[in-house]
Amino acid sequence: MPIRNLLITTTDQDLVQVPDPYKAIGTWDPLDPLDPPARRYAVTNILVCNNEVPNIIHEEAGTTNFDMHIVKRNEAKGDINKVVNSLQMPSGETFTFDSEKIVLESGDRIVIVGDSPTNLSATVSWLEV
Image 1 (spheres, one colour):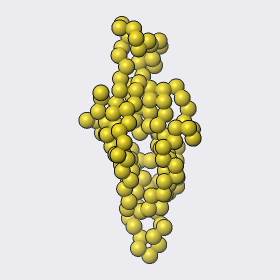
Image 2 (spheres, helix red, strand yellow):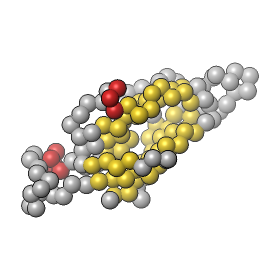
Image 3 (tube, rainbow, N blue to C red):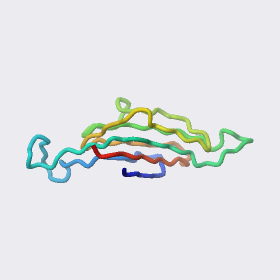
Image 4 (cartoon, rainbow, N blue to C red):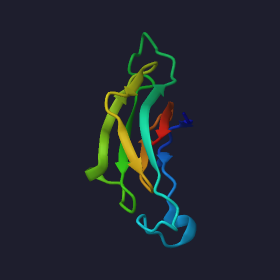
């Protein structure tokens, strides 16, 4: 089961992207037996951690927000594919996205972006199905 970790920044980052055969060969027909097969990833878990040490005097210190999008192949990131909207993450907290299983197909991706301060990290695990 692959795992990917990254530090969340204030610019869009692909947390996971399923390889797209079209980009590799220029043309691609998933029904053509001579073309590479489509790939699918089942995302099993996404964790987002605020790495800031909690401040018991100033509890709001280090609090930051993040957005997450599940973007279909050849589509742009936008409100239509936003699944987490400005989730506030207090210092020392971890958000777990594991109740729903997400199946991504070739070219699909999960995009994550944070606010300042940039003290969040993300971990994703998936299985190829």
